[in-house]
Length: 184
Image 1 (tube, one colour):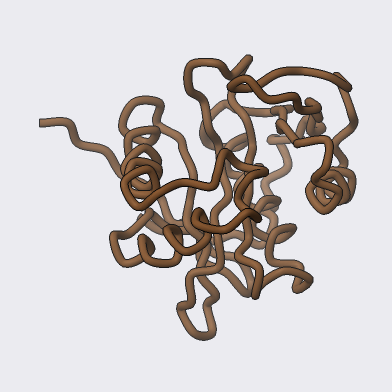
Image 2: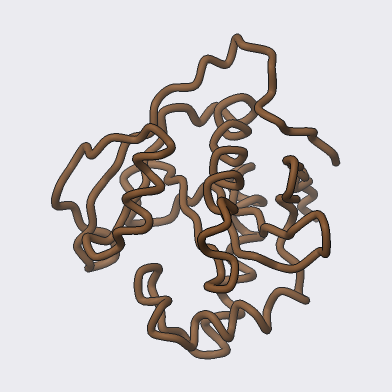
């Protein structure tokens, strides 16, 4: 039997935790919308299930993956952020999605910054990329806010055109963990 642990990362307002089966209804609702086309949607119920199980599989196979984001104050599922690497990816990617009702609150920035910091400090993934669809202005703005720079204007991922943004290297010798507390 394979055994692995998905660490928990906490910030001031958020908990980045393992994906749970209870998250599936919100994921299915998100993937049923046209809004999900930036991340491979729309998807049916079965493909949403596969997305959930694939996230857990990334952790088992690579030792890193995507966390699900919940608000500390109420436990509400707000989206996901973390590292992805599958056939077709040039290298591990930092990705994120925030449910529509959580946009504009700084959640994507806080969660993605914590995920990126953890990946650099604990998983050997520093200076990673993000694939961003050309039409996704919100994600481009977030990448810029995170200090990423456009590296490749026209790349391809899974048959779709995207830009590749490169995140800056984090000084991992700095022992001040950016507002994170790590739990197991």
